[in-house]
Length: 352
Image 1 (spheres, rainbow, N blue to C red):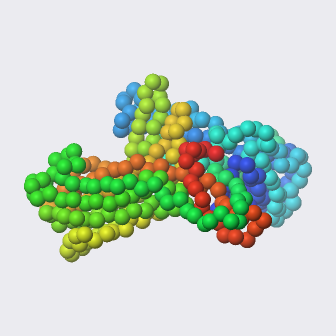
Image 2 (image 1 turned 30 degrees about the vertical axis):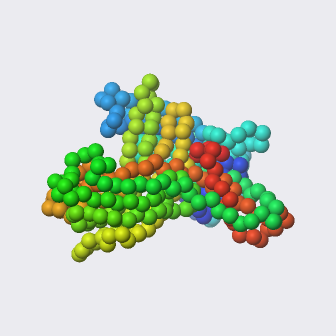
Image 3 (image 1 turned 180 degrees about the vertical axis):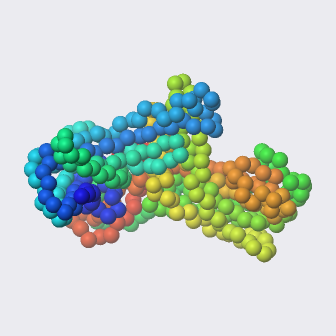
């Protein structure tokens, strides 16, 4: 005897103003009675204080009280019987009732190191005092993209490019000790990278190695998350690595000088979300360009933390604002035109 939840969408992605729909599937060798079938939707922000920048006293707190986003319970069926074999019971739950006002509390799904934003739907089949209840839980994903806006058909096609920032990396921009040959011989790497982009688009840019007295072993692009939690009067901030994308790896030889190398980083969905600045917490992101120079020391420490400055490393970090696309635009009176991005939502900061 078992029960499971099958959501109507295979990707499990929903928006706050949409109904959460699916079916409750039971499998039983014989029919059985129940007192009620109840469905509960729960969404919350879980905050956790761990080591790192947190002190000993702060670490004692551990997990803070979760912040509730949504908590709804509906009765799918009153008392009755469920037949033998496989039975499917449809359900539909409105996450936000019309007239509830704005949806600011519906943050997007996010799984971080210290902050987690999660939405769960649970079904419970109550079978009375003499029998154990049957239950199942599944996670669904909340995204806060807005609806379709109609615009005049004579408006020209256009796209807003991601905001870019220029950067340069030299021996003079580094605040940590470098190898003597790097300090004396010098190096210069220039380029540009986006500091604001949609979650559905890659982080793009380019870089050029203009000069380097020491051969370059690799150039890596690190995506970092910065999670901050308000604890009393203190703000506890932790920076952790999400993923590393290797821009170029030279097994035998050096990076060609004056050659433009593309930067193209796919954003992982569940490990990122729109940048959030809330009262008790915030979620921000950074992009770090790390250059590893060929040396004997780099061979001795091949698995060192890329966030930690080393003598054979040069790095530059820039803030990254992730946003959800503002809208899909269609010419007035048309329903078959493909999507065009007109702009990014710069105001929501992870909220609708």
